[in-house]
Structures are given as structure tokens and as C-alpha cells.
Amino acid sequence: MGLTVQLHKIAKAYQGNRILADCSYTFAAGGAYILMGDNGSGKSTLFRLAALLEPPDQGEVRYLQGDLTLPPDITLKRRLTMVFPRVGVFSRSVSENVAYGLKIRGLPRDRVREQVARALEEVALSHKTHQPAATLSSGETMRLGLARALAVEPEVLFLDEPTTHIDRANTRLIEDCLLQTLRERALTLILITHDPAQAHRLGGRRLLLQEGRIVEVD
Amino acid sequence: METIFQGLVSAVRLIAGFNPELLGIIFLSLQVSGLALGAASALGLPLAALLALKRFPLRGLLLGLLNTGMGLPPVVVGLLLYLILSRSGPLGFLELLYTPGAMIIAQTILAFPIVTSLSHAAIVGVDPVIRLAAQTLGATPRQEAAAVVREARYGIGAAVIAAFGRVSAEVGAVLMVGGNIAHYTRVMTTAIALETDKGNFDLGIALGIILLTLSLLVTVALRAVQRRGRAPTGVRLWD
Image 1 (cartoon, each protein chain N blue to C red):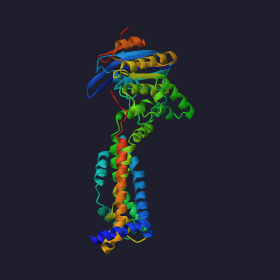
Image 2: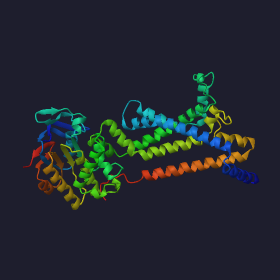
Image 3: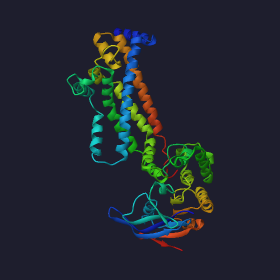
Image 4: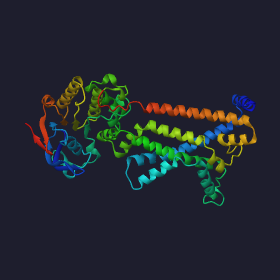
């Protein structure tokens, strides 16, 4: 089913510098949204607010399941996840990195193993399972970040420029994985990119962040 | 020169022959320093994590005091502890003066600021994206803190080893509160001082060799931990 994310007149400023103002938008459950905009337009800020990592100065971020508004507690936070352009990998093996989100949820060992294997397969990293995560290339590190996010089976997935710093082959692998995920799972995907062609390939609704507000492109 | 040579030969004999007196002193030294280090770590590591991950009033003052404490002169610690534990002191009723317990307390006081301050630096040095990664994967504040502390494990290990190096080589405080009583509070450093005073260089040199070996092992361990800690963190922007 997925979750609906509703931004209601949110505003955010850092040290007096207004980043978002009166920004409203509803990301419908199960939809795919591609967010574009110039550097400094506030895309990452919008992500952090929408992903409940920090509160807006004004307005409200609501998560809805059907008509029900969910409280912003740890239970809700565990139903969404986010991948940043700089993937902070733990200095452990690839599989331990993917297992992290599952272990902190207290999942049984068998299920952790099963979900880790599946997530690594989805991003084509199964052959690196036991390798130290620190030895991965930047493209593989991003795929690891994606595997770690997918392993926890989020209902809302935020991806902040997942392919900006990586080569074409890794970009293709990530896009294929996302397309497959969108086909197979009830997931709300919100992705930031600077690449209009990628937005086209992923086929989601294209949005533009302009002067602190979201504008639909098509 | 001859005295040194003879002393060295006798010292090697004492070590090779597993001299019971020598072994007793080594065992007590390791016991006192080990327990002091355990106590300092048990108190210092949670405080280091708290100082690194939380903002609260007087935090800066506390950090300043801890940094100053890293250079605490052992004789001053010995003097203060002596005054506190002596019969007329506020904790005299505990009758801890001239016991291994007093020596453990003295070494704990010396090790605590080192463990805490260096561990704090190690935790603060962890890349903020690690904490963010834990947060976005659904960690509670406590799980977030644990993830960050775990990333700092090599730095924390180095802090504990550095503190061990300091307390095991310390003489002033343990001499003042331990009293250097044979078979009871005599540790390597105090024994070396005493045997030198008595002109009995054999045991002094033997203990000196052991202490130097211990220092060498501490240094090797410290370097090994630091080398592991310098391994790539896995945070890459490009190849």
C-alpha cells in the first residue's frame, strides 16, 4: 500500500537564509517522484524535513496511511529510509552493513540472512558479501547504500542524487534495481537528480524545486 | 661498567629462573594497573561518549578539566589521596592507606582523564555521515550512539593502551599511598626505586628489563591499533 507523504506549508531557513517557503506537496502512496532543481535550491533540505530528520521552522510534514495520520515516532521512522550522495558505510563487511538496519529492529538471524542476501542480489553485490565495505569502489558503495536501504523494506524511499558521482555501468545497475523495486514493491520513491534523462528513464512524476516551492513539470 | 654488566647477568638469571619474588612483583603490578585501567575505562568510556554525542551545560568546562587531568603529576595525586585516606582524613575509616586498593584508586585517578579525553577525541573524530546513516536506517538515539562509538573502537583502544602505559610506569602515587611493602604493595616501579637505593642492582635491572619490555609491548600494541584505525573508513566520493 505504501505511505503518503504530505508537506503542508513547510518553511526552513538556516542562519536567516530562507531555503524553503510555504512549500506544499503530496507524494501519493506507491508513486515515484523525481525531484530536480538547481544547486542550492533546497532539494536536500526538503528531503531531510520530509524524512523527519529535522523539523521545519513552520508548517508540517504528515505521513498518512489511508485517512490516518501517523505520529512521527520511531515506528514511523522505521518505515522510511534515505540514501545520501555520501554513503556513510560502517567499517564492517558488506553483509554486516546491510544487516545493520535489520539487526537494530531485532529481526531473527535467519530472516536477517535472507533479507541481506536478497538485497545484495538486487544491487548485484552478492559476490562481495564478505568483503570489507571500505574496499568498495564509489559506485559499489552507492549500490551498498541502496541495498542497505532496500533490506529494511521501506515504504518510503528517499534517494538524494544516487548516481551523481558514479560511472554509467553503476548508474544503469542502480536504475535497473529501482525500476524492478518499483514494479515489485508497494513503495513511495522520491529521488533527487540533475539528470533529466534519468528522470525520463525512471518514469516517475517530474517535479522542480524553484524558489523554495515544488512545481510539477508534467 | 662492571657493576652494570654483572647486574645484567644476574638479572637475566633471575628472569630465566622465574624468581618467585620477581614474579610476585610483576603479578601485583599487572593486577593493580589492570584493575585501575578497568575501573577508569568503565567510568571514562560512557562519559567520553556522553561528552562527544550530547550537548549539555558545563560540557566545555568538563572537557577542559579532563584535558588538564591528562597531565596530572602522580606525586600530587599521591599526596591528595594520602591526605584523604590517612587516619585523620575524610576516608580514613576505610583503612585503605598502604593497601593495593589505595594503589588501584591512585592509578584509576591517573588513567581516567587519559581514557576519557582520548576516547572523546576518537568519538568526535568519527565522520558525521555514520551517525546519519544509522539514523536513516531506523536507529534509536541509543543505537545511533552505539554505532558511532563502535566506529571509534580503534581510537578508544589506543586511549586504553596509552593509559595503561602511563599507569604501569608510574611510581610517585603508588609509592606514597602503597608504601612499598614487600609481598603486599611492592610493584615494579617502587621495587626498582628501593633496590637502587639499597645498591641491589640485580633485581632492579631485572625489573627494569621487564618494565621496558612491557613499555615496548604497549608501544607495539598502540601502533598496531593506530594502523588498523587508519584503514579507509569506506566513505568515498570518487575513486
